[in-house]
Amino acid sequence: MSEHTIADASTLSGWRKSSHSGNESGSCVEVLDGYLSGVPVRDSKNPHGPAIVFTATSWSSFVSTFKTGR
Image 1 (cartoon, rainbow, N blue to C red):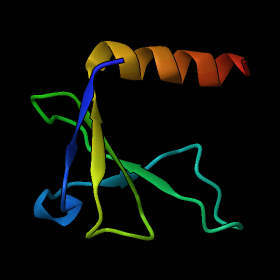
Image 2 (image 1 turned 180 degrees about the horizontal axis):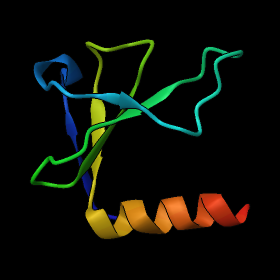
Image 3 (image 1 turned 120 degrees about the vertical axis):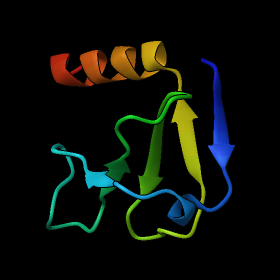
Image 4 (image 1 turned 90 degrees about the horizontal axis):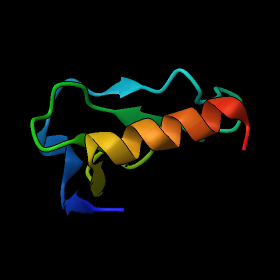
């Protein structure tokens, strides 16, 4: 899987909470749509922390696997 990181994810705007993140445990993943280099993903509890940027292919594969419950 090819990815890179963004040291301070707060430098980007437009984050949205993943529809699969739960409210009860505080485990929230945020994603950023429309980023040209791929799909940035960050921990919502640490907005100034790093984000991992997945390639579009890797992100699609991850989401498909997650949806099928594997």
